[in-house]
Length: 197
Image (cartoon, rainbow, N blue to C red):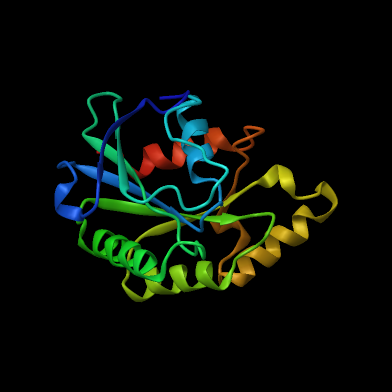
């Protein structure tokens, strides 16, 4: 089905067992300020679905959205951003435990979208996340955000370097821009494919 994802906010939860049952689920993870909320809004073509804040670290719970298309019993979960240095250490540790418990314990997860800032490239925390997912054999797709922030003259090199930094082939990374709409349709198709019955 072409067009925006029909996403509706369902609930926020502080642990796995407080999320609603689902047939299939996609999780969204990434560093604080990578643009998760902006991308969710772009996927749904709605400005206020996910709250966009100028202050990193605002997402502190597992925010669950239902995909209401063709009777799909599917959900998408926005996870707190990792690497937010200004949060107290105890809070960061709590977020890490919550995210880890969710990513390992949610059997219905069909893929984890790992968002990496395309303008910055993979940080050590992004590399750590991908290595952790590989170690635990969890399915994931890498999405590079902020395509519009990378100069056209350096994009090919940046795409190669970003993929190499995560030990991936450049074709394994989906580049998007929530602000300009670059490849948002492609990412919608990917999400629909991962949530297909």
